Image (cartoon, rainbow, N blue to C red):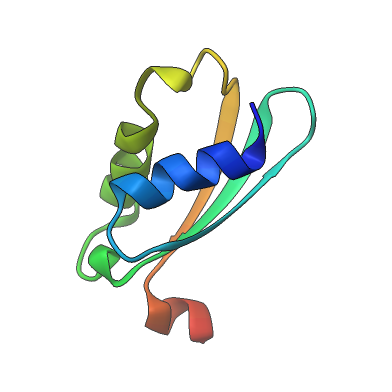
Length: 77
């Protein structure tokens, strides 16, 4: 699966976010998701939100996904 497709799926599922996804060519991806929707939400719940947008792709087309999630303020610091 192409990185830009994953980026679009996440953008469609999480309001007003910016996303960058990088893959290693073997189904392993790293995603950085920045959105103020993450304010006052812990890391585990942020990751659950992102994984929920991808649904059954995780474990199938997406073999592994490493996440970094930030609010706008966290990312700028």
